[in-house]
Amino acid sequence: MQKVALVTGSSRGIGRRIALRLANEGYDIVINYARSKKGALETAEEVEKLGRKALVVKANVGDVTKIKAMFEQIREEFGRLDIFVNNAASGVLRPAMELEESHWDWTMNINSKALLFCAQEAAKLMEEAGGGKIVSISSLGSIRYLENYTTVGVSKAALEALTRYLAVELAPKNISVNAVSGGAVDTEALLHFPNREELLEEARSKTPAGRMVEMEDIVNAVMFLLGEESGMICGQTIIVDGGISLLV
Ligand SMILES: NC(=O)c1ccc[n+]([C@@H]2O[C@H](COP(=O)([O-])OP(=O)(O)OC[C@H]3O[C@@H](n4cnc5c(N)ncnc54)[C@H](OP(=O)(O)O)[C@@H]3O)[C@@H](O)[C@H]2O)c1
Image 1 (cartoon, rainbow, N blue to C red):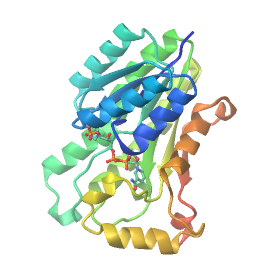
Image 2 (cartoon, rainbow, N blue to C red; image 1 turned 135 degrees about the vertical axis):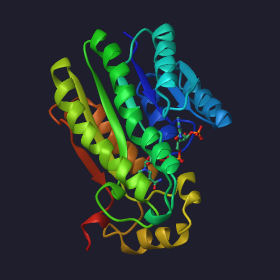
Image 3 (cartoon, rainbow, N blue to C red; image 1 turned 90 degrees about the vertical axis):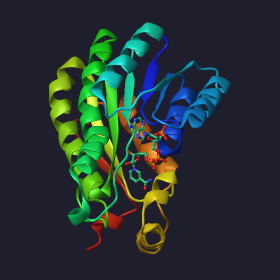
């Protein structure tokens, strides 16, 4: 049976790399995006070049109605889902004292709430297929202080906690739930950081492994959690940061 994977936020960055790696491994791909239509279509073109089907779905994952509509489209087009990678993220980057309620809601909805409501829909399809795998992408701000990162850091902490709850409740349905947390990766996401240069310099000079984390480092860990060898890993967050989070 042809297997199907959904990667949220696969119009660019790490999400696109995960989508292409999965296509290369033989999965048909659901490419989700919110604003970058051109990027999403480019990902689709590359998936098709690999001989796989691509379904492009515009859906703001911070909106539960849009999530449900996206899963309806997946059901209609493919009738199954084997993998769900919860990668899409956004956030308002400001010091804690400057945050407004709308900034909190925006970030929590896209980065945390989306996992719960996508996982509910994904689990229905996965159960019908006999099981599946869910992996989310987190970041070090979930466990450490990072400048301007309050909303995203807190949302990622919620995502990691939710990963544990979902893992326990979905394990009996043969659905594994885990996360990969990364150190700074030089993607378009970093363009929004007021302290981008400082952040990159710190990652380059202080990472014990001697270099910054690259997109493929994250993708490799995601692929491990999506593979057969990780079957008994349940509700964990694997940190891929070259050791930087171990420093004081
Ligand atoms: N870059 C890093 O340093 C780093 C480090 C650790 C973890 N991560 C995590 O890795 C993941 C990918 O990061 P990245 O650096 O590749 O980010 P990115 O280049 O900014 O890409 C983000 C992706 O998410 C999509 N997206 C944003 N808001 C969305 C929404 N409301 N609904 C649906 N899609 C939405 C974007 O699509 P549109 O453009 O269409 O909105 C885009 O495809 C994120 O979870 C991030 O937190 C990143």
